[in-house]
Image (cartoon, rainbow over all chains, first blue to last red; front, side, top):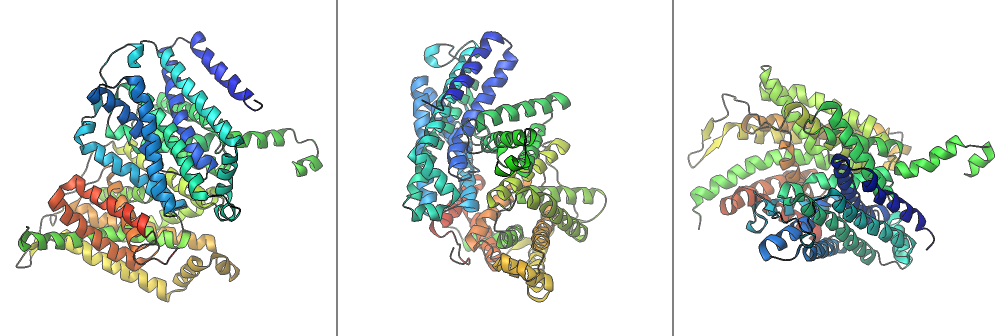
Length: 325
Length: 289
C-alpha cells in the first residue's frame, strides 16, 4: 500500500481535531471546508485528471441534495438510504450529461458552456417544479437520531464528512495509480494522440464524469443532512460550481490533496474577508474570484505544485543541479 | 389557436428584443472568433455597463447620448482586461483563459453586489412608454431605437472589419495566428482590441436596454445565457449568425412565453441551446469544426 501513507496521516490528524477543539464555530468551519473539499475532489477527478473543465458541477451537488431531501420528506425513505440513492443519482446525472456531451465531441469552451447550461436548466426547473417545493424549497424535518442521519454534536457530522473526504482521497489515489488514471491523464494531455494509441477517449471521459458526479453529489447529500434545507439557489446555484472548481485549482489541480488544501485555504480566506469587513454580501466571492485569477497567473499548478518549485528555489545548491532539476 | 392579432405583435416585439440580444451575442462571437475562447465575463461586463448607464442618467446624461461616452470607455476596459490580466495570467492556455474570465466575472459581479446591494434600479426617461402606432399594432419607442441602433453598430463593425488595417489584422489573427505573427502583426494587441470591441458592443447594448429594463448586480446574466444560445445557434465566431440567431431567439422567447409563461420561456431557450450544441455544435452558420 505504498503511497497511501500521507492519506492515513492527514486523515488521522484531522480526525483528532474534535478531541482537542470543542468550539462549535471552528468545527462548523471545518465541516463546511471538508464538504467543499469533497465537492472539489469530484471536480478534480474530471477536471484535474481528465482536463475537462466543468463550470456546472452544481448539477451534481444539487441532484444529490434534492434527491436526499425529497426521498425523506415525500417518500419516507430512511435518511441513510436516501444518502446512498442521492450519490447514485449524482452518478446517473454524470452518466447522462457525459453521454450527451462527450459523444457529440464537445471539448474546451463548449464543454464548459454546456455543463453551465445543464446546471442552469436544473436550477430553473427546480425553482418552479412542485416536487422540489418550487420557490419555497424543501425542509427536512428535525429528527435528531442517528438513524435519521441527524446528530446533536457537530463532531459527529465532522467525522462523517471526514470519512467521506477520506474515501474520496483513497479513490483519487487509486485512480492515479490505475491504468484508467493513466488513460485519463493521456486524454487530458493530448486527446487525439491518446486516441491514436488506442485509448477510448469518450468512454474514459464518461467514466470519469460518473465518478465525478457521484463524489460531488455526496457533498450535496451531506449539505442537505447538515443544514436540513435545500432550495434551487443553494442546490443548483453558481456558488457551488465555482467553489468546486476553485478548490482543486487553488490547491493543486490533478493532485490527490489539492482539493482538500484548496478548500481549507479558500474557506479561511472567505472567513478572513468576512471578519475584516463585517458580513457584507459578495465579499467572500470577490476574494475567491481574485484568488482564482492570481493563482492561475502565478501558480498555475496550485499551491501543491508551487511547493516543490519554492523548495527548489530555496535549496538551490549549485547552478548545475538547478539546471537538471 | 391564437389569433394573428396577438401573434403578430408578439413576433414583432420578439424581433425588437432579439436585436438587442444579437448585439450582446455579437460581442461574444467576435471574441470567440478571434481568441477561440468563450468570455465568461461577458455578462458581468454587461451588468457593469448597465450600472454605468444608470449613473450616467442620474448625472443628467440621456442613455442614447451615454453610448458615445460608454462605448469608448468600455472599449478601454476590455482592452486593458485582455492585455494586462487575461493574456498574461493564462500563459497561452485556453483552459486557463476560461478560468480567468470566470474569475473576473465573479469579481465584477460581486463587487457590484457589495457596492450597490441586491436592489433593483430603474430609470425614468420620458420616452420609456411612448409607442408608435403601425395601424395593426403599437411598438415601443425604446425598442425601435434599439433595433435601429443594433443594425448601425453591425454595419460599422462590418465596415471596420472589411476596410481598415485593424480589421484585416483581426481577420488574419482569427484565421492563422502564427502566420499573422510572422507577418508582423502584434497578436497581443489584436487580441486586446478584439476584446475591447466585444466589450464596447456590450456597453452599447446596456445603453439601449436601460430605458426599458432594470438593473441589479445579476441583471446581465439573463442576457448572457441567451447570448450563449444565440452564438451557439448562429455558429461561434459568425457575425451574421449572431444577428440572425438573435432575431430567431427573440421571436422564440416572445412566442413561447405566450404559451408557457415567462420562467419556462427561458427553459425553452436552454433546450434549444443544448439540442443545438449536441446535434450541430458548429451552429447554423459556423464552419464545421
